[in-house]
Image: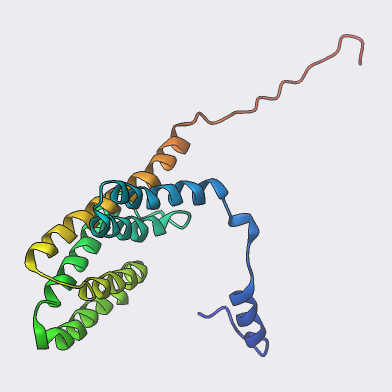
Length: 192
């Protein structure tokens, strides 16, 4: 069922592309996720390990995309599994890039398999990001099997770091006691 019916569908479609709901913006979420994304890169700059920090930052960015749009079915266990899937796609991309002339057919096969997961409605966004992560892994210069293992580890750690940034505020908001309002009818002695 499409929301764009009748003769006004082009106008409704353009409106849906250009409309912006200001009420959905939360500045504190943007600042928090921005700090979580930039932290691995800053640590890498100070420790003179920039390439490794970039891998961790990529892992942080892809997993932190769920902030603000996390579906109710995405439990923490599923998000940890998504961290593993993204890190695996990145490592497989690095391994595929070591195959020389087989890169193009293996790349096409990998994208086909990843896009096939998109037939399940809940996996559309995961498969889209996974295909991007797989493509980034293929584009890494100087690929080797050992760099694939290191890339997996750093990407996974970056994903877990982002998961920490997404989960802590949810746990904090769930632990707050709910305010209850009690209304008591007060009867003034002088009124009838």
